[in-house]
Image (cartoon, rainbow, N blue to C red; front, side, top):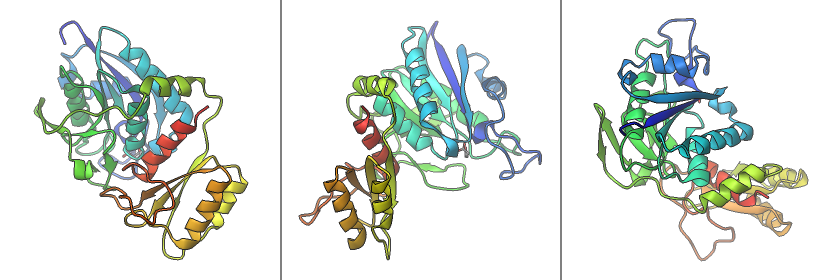
Length: 311
Ligand code: SIN
């Protein structure tokens, strides 16, 4: 790390949120503070050489493809600088797992890209953002770290496995069966498994992304008691490019919905079958009629399908 710097890129989220009611954890507006304010709130960062950039300022529920494209471009720019050891990206928690998966798919970086966040706004009685930011910088400084990871509540999660599991708790993320990559404890890292792995041909995916004329339209539909085919028929009529179905249990799909998905497939719409279960992955069965999502959750299967359909 000697002579090298960390690039801290901000995109908004609760970590940059403020409330007019001091100490309130819910009545706040996300994405208010700028990256310089976030850095100033962490005295421990004083000794770390860094550069910073405000890439976006958004509540992550409103994440857009254009922001994703800019973020991928800016990450790619900073990763290519020899003096940059790693990146930290501040982000809202609500779509953090999607951005992490997207960035790993298009960058698969040889340096660490560490996404971090907060569950409480900066004006909370005990905000979690400053500690998360400090922990994220510790990970970004670590020799040998690579790939896109998420750091929250002292835990390091891989981009493929991480998902938000709790609406309110500070430790809101889980890596499910895979378990976390490791933990950050007082600036020290305790690793329990390898860093994030490549999700395919990242350079080709980035190239396609930067040249794409439009984003493919891929929607998620859910199977549930009483599900039918009307939503699928409406999507096909609107020219949808792909559909991910969040099936029940081991990816099973209500017969009414499944019939409509099969018709959609015959008309050229790409269909992928995931599960609405938060743990486990869809395993093959002889009776399967729709392709599986390779262990990806519905939101990540959607991103993988969108990237595959980019032209
Ligand atoms: C957001 O996702 O931007 C708001 C919620 C959060 O960061 O916890």
